Every structure is written in C-alpha cells, then in structure tokens.
Length: 446
Image 1 (cartoon, helix red, strand yellow):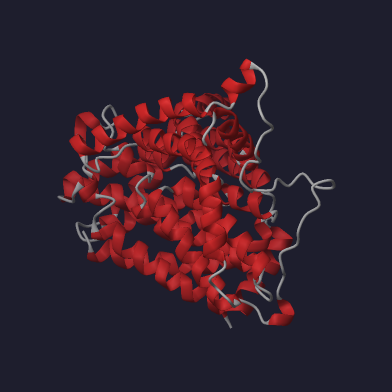
Image 2: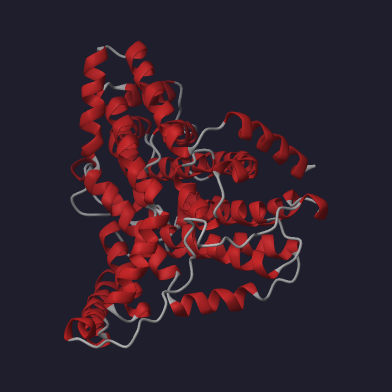
C-alpha cells in the first residue's frame, strides 16, 4: 500500500515538479509577489532587496559549502571507502539493504550533516551493485531521508551551533545557548531517534515488488558526465620537486599534527562546545589525514565540488529570496501571524510549523534563524518559553521541509545519477510522518 501511495506521488511529480534550479526561480517569483501584495514594499524596491540578498549571506553560504565539501572528501577517503564496501557486503536482501541504508546514513549525519548527505548515497550505490532485486530509487531516498531524520541532533547542525558561536547576531539578547539545551536535549534527540527507526521500516514497506524495481545501472564515463565517487586514484611516482611537494605526506602530516593538537586542546578545555567554524576545521583536518597528501585531497575536493555544483549556484538565489522576505518584512509577517495565536504550551509547535513554511523558500537554517529568530525570541520571553525551545523548533522545522524542498537533495542525486522526480514521492511520505513525530515532540518537550 505504501509503495502504491508513493508511486502515485511520483507520477504526479513527474508531470508537475520542475528541476531543482527551476524550483528556486519559481519560489523567487512567488516570494516577490507575496511581498508585493502583503507588505508595503514597492515593485522596484523588492528587486533591490533581491539583489542585496544575493550577497548578504555569502560568508554563511561559504561555511555551508565548506562543510558539505569537507564531508564529501571525508566520505571518499580510501579507508572510509574500504569500510563502506565491507559494510555493504553484510545485507543480503532488498529489505535489509533499505533498512541498513537509513541507519548508516543517519549515523553518519549525526557526526556531520555534510558527511551523512554524502556517505549515505555512496553506501546506497554500493548496496545497489551487490544486491539483486533492490530498487535503486528507494535506496537513495532512504539514504537522504535517513540523514534528514537525524539532522536535528547532528553535531554540526547549523542553528544550535550558530547560537553557541561567539559573535552570533543575537548574542547581546540571548547570550550563548549551550548544546546541552539544543542538540543534546530530548526536544531534538527524541524525534530524531524515533523518526530514524520509523523510517527504517517505512522505506522497507515502500520497496516495490520485484517486477517493478528499478536497478542500479553502471554509467559509461565516456558518454556521461556523471562522476564516479570512488576513492582518489593513486598518482604516478612523483619526479620533480614540485610533484614531490604536491604528494608529500610529510608536509600533510605536519599540518595534520598541528590541527589535531588544536582539536585535542579544544575538546580538553571546552568539551563538546562545538560551533560551525570548529566543525569545518575538524572535517578538513580529518580529510587531510585520511587522504595523506595535498594532491589527493585536492582531487577529492574537485570531485566534491562537481557533485555540489547545483547547491553552489542556487545558494545566491535562495539568499536573494531571503533578501526579499527579510527586507520587506514578509518573514516577520509570517512569524508574527503564527505567534499571534500561540500560548506558552503551543509556541514551540507554531514556531516549528512557521519554520517548516519559511524553509520552503529559504532552505538555510542559519539565514532563517537570523531573520526569524528575533521575533520568536521576543515571543518566547513574553510567554515565558525558553530560548532553547525556540532554537530547537526552528532547527527541526528547517529539517522537515528539506524532504519537500529539493535543494539539499542535490548532492545525493548527483552521486546517484538520479533526478528529484525519482525520489520525491518517497520523501514526501517520510516528511508527513516526520511532521507528526516532530509536532508531538514540540508539545511534550517544552
């Protein structure tokens, strides 16, 4: 039954859902006209907001791209690839393959959302090569949604790390919010753990019968631009001084030792007091250590950028949408409307639902929090609700509609060689389940 439902969604998507980039352009136009009719902003003024927004979040966009690229480089390191192959040899049938994909992707996402979004699809591809009768589309959807399920409690999730980073935009009013109240709180951990368990069985039930499966097909690199996501090939023996420097393990490990010394010192003095800058630094140092030489790491970065190209070009457009919605006051209008009928008991729920809606237009938790946060914090203070609960509600709301919004699915689709239409039906059903679980959490854990 679940497969039939997902297939109906899929057939509708094939007719009506555009390419991810076209989706961003349509949202830009929709945001423009919503702001034009619902706010006092004039037509050309909104164009000015759009242009200004293109570059307002450039630094944050770079942080997001770095964490994704660094996670990708870590996932395709030779030792990680070897582990993936061993792990992929364990499941012996399609049902176990789908369930293991959800769990492996979720586990990787806990360490780093960028790592999870990459390692999960790579693991799914390996399973699809090994197991006869498994549906490739379901595996990739399971990998993506498995990562999304765990993202609220990921050690690199954006909004909790942002409000725990010195100098964040709201530090003067709320100070630094410790991770014990956000990532490690029941409000985020319980729905993440419950959802990933549900998803493991959900995607198993959505797997089609043998006659309807779509298997993995190897792509001929001579006729396709798809990049093989294997570990970087061993380079030829270096001859010149320049080549020796490019391939120098000594040079690499001097940097790695320096980096690891800082990482150990950081954990020893601050514990798990993580922030975005430190998460990026950690991923880069680990990636360098596992690849072993500058040339191999740069080769991995080139592969990563190829698979994340869609996100890189779309980030400015979504920043432009943020510019329209923030500068015109449209986000404030949406947030204030949800707050207007909230109580102390229901504020986290309605903040969550408003974040779900805003995230469709702006799939960036950090940028969304910077604009939506002040209004929600003011409401929390007036209703005596903790700031951490508001951060958590925005965090999980941002994750939820990522299963509808194609933006963050692009790395997985790039690895898989699939389009959003191939997995969207499965993701939509997962999102509906996630909304139910998360809404209950917002009402119970205040």
